[in-house]
Image (cartoon, rainbow, N blue to C red; front, side, top):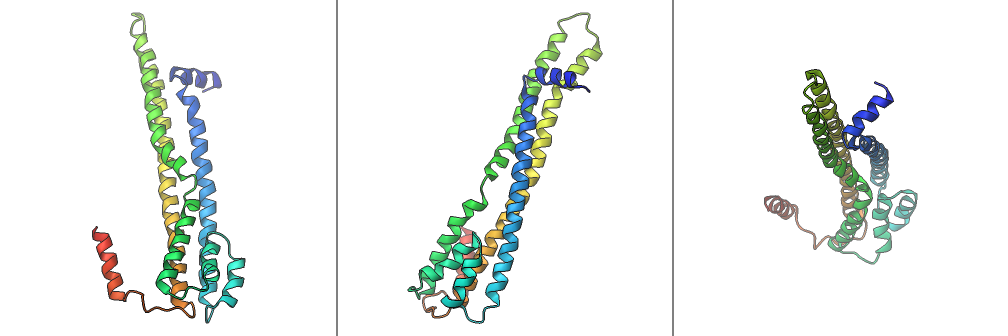
Length: 225
């Protein structure tokens, strides 16, 4: 199959097949870039958690070097107890740490909307290209002298647009679900760091914290809702 034949098939799809390589390029670029980024974040999260776990007593003087050497998004969490050193209520500090976690999540979710959009858009564009290609195939029926092989060949060419859209959507869907799972793991690491800071930070008042039984009740009620 030479370039002239590919150009002919793409023209019969209304130019839709020309768009498919760009959609595939977007899927591959976002998938590779986000995978490398989130994989690096998960390694940094594990490294930060191990460094925090090895501290015998978490105080401002030994937490500051760790916060300065850490990278985002974990640096933002470690800086909270330093910035708000006057807060001794564990519940209040926990809420501030939760704010820090929420502010970092969009950095992890960056550009994933492109994958989500492409997974939906590629099959629809492929179907549109097939419909346009079928119009050209049916025009052959107007010619009485046309042989059946010409008609079936035109139908097969028309279906290439749908096939291309489905291939791109499958690749994008697998990548999107994998990256979402990886992102949830990084968020879980941030939540773990948040709990470690609340549980081990010196000088905090835990009198307003919920007992473990009440915490389980709140979690259960949230899941039921």
